[in-house]
Image (cartoon, rainbow, N blue to C red; front, side, top):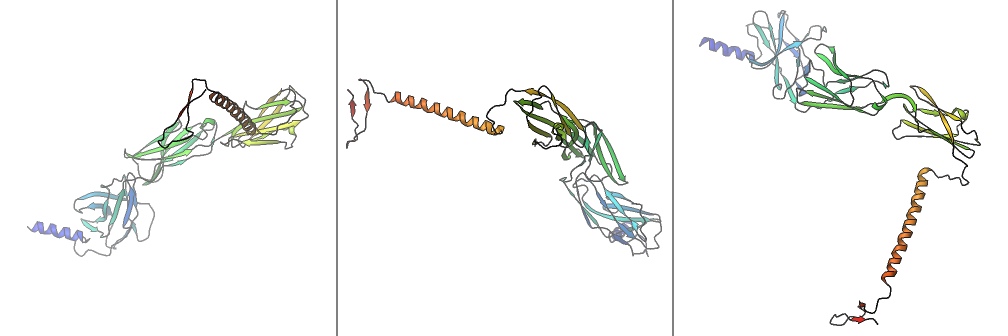
Length: 387
């Protein structure tokens, strides 16, 4: 009976946050936030400081717990940032791999020192865990250049210790590895994609998918921009119409290349156009009084990555037409379309008129025609025989 009474008194004393021995000091102080909210699969890091009376001697065991002080459901050790704070001690704790319903609840701090001496702070820290993961992986892409080795990193959401994360890359093929860096108990974890960019990787979508605890998914996507030196395409052409030279140079590159014609000697008698993808540049020149057929014209294309040249063969297309059309290609197609539509409409009208004339020709003697020229009161229509 006496032992039962002592146990009840002990529980009451601990519930009231008193020590378990008489004449114990009471001027304990703690500084910590009262509530924290985290997302399932991640972690919560709580920073805390406390002061103790001078009579409390080291070493002190610092423990966070949830539930019954005598039989806690969860016990968490504290971690230190190794920073000296005068007159204060650290009582930080990390709640890792959050699970809704299991990690939620009120946590309290317990100090133990000497021979069975215990103090429990009355303050509580309330933890709430959300099921939905809103944080996304962070993809970091360096400057990508064709032929140069590149490393793209995907950071796992949060800064938890040894996260239970599976990381999958989709979009391109490459070698993957795992890395981490940071201070203890606050590390960043990455997956690294290593590959050699090619021109076809430009504007490719790359996705990093992170799965936490086997079922909690989050992903991020980036569009790759791969730099490469210009390439002059084989669609570049030069023609001579009579005594007029017309040339077109087509170049592809990232950043968008510029095109130069050394034959122009620094003049600007040409015009350029850019593709909708902003990676192809087209430059056209037109020079009158040119009669040097069976020669080549040099086209030069350059961007920040490099430069290239091409000698374009000049082809003869005969005499220049007497009528010089100033229409651009779209206008020419539009004009042809209108002409064809007019011709088709005219033919259709002739056919319909011919069909109507045949339909309204004079009928034979034995044909009957029903007419409604006059309506009688009894609403009977007359049939007339044509002679």
